[in-house]
Image (tube, rainbow, N blue to C red; front, side, top):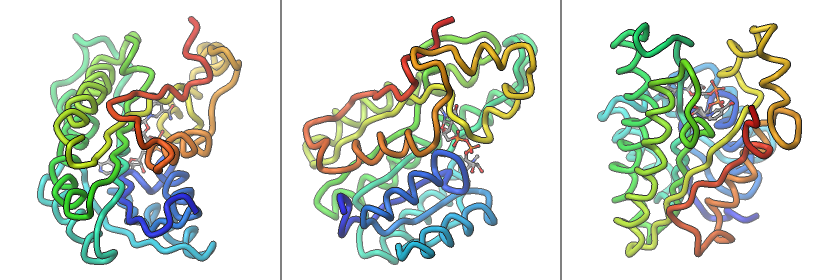
Length: 250
Ligand code: NAD
């Protein structure tokens, strides 16, 4: 029960890494506000948590919308009496095309969800974390925030931004006992990689292109997030933890 008595928000909690982490947090004793734009998936995560005896609510939220993120934090604080953990995880990919062929609309949406969404989470959660005596923020970056990949211009830029936003927030809020870290997953078996899986030529290469020779599971990422969110990581802030089986090797 490493998160006993803690209240947490998980964005992008309707599937994949967010769902696995929301369930893991609840197993360790946290009360979890699951948020996502996907209502059905988010409610299903809540059901899975309650089925195991955990405590959770669903708050439908678009992380790119300032008012909705502010309301998410307020709803969690009202429901749980405070806030100790924020997992800023919602994210999207984009068309696999060169920058010159990427539409401005797609660029804006990816930056707004993946990067501005993390900024808004920090902006509205920090006052609530301060009021609870401190806490932990974990942001989902990516291996593709550390390394460039062809046809990933907006995704590369958004996730690299998340890594420095993490360091910035760690410096600004350390004095309030708020730790801010990032995870950098490699290829993880979730909906976001469906387009890669459908590429019969590249998938056999991509799916084995790390030191361990396999893709990761959402649960393996959830364990890393749990560590960073828990008191076991009490002297770790501003860090980016790779959870990538050893990184892409091609
Ligand atoms: P996923 O598609 O299963 O989950 C993403 C979730 O985010 C979905 O439930 C989706 O509805 C939600 N979402 C999308 N836009 C949103 C918005 N505007 N507001 C709120 N929620 C929104 O994929 P996943 O792999 O679990 O993705 C989670 C995070 O992990 C993302 O930030 C992604 O970029 C990152 N990531 C994934 C991988 C991978 O290989 N799966 C690798 C590196 C990083």
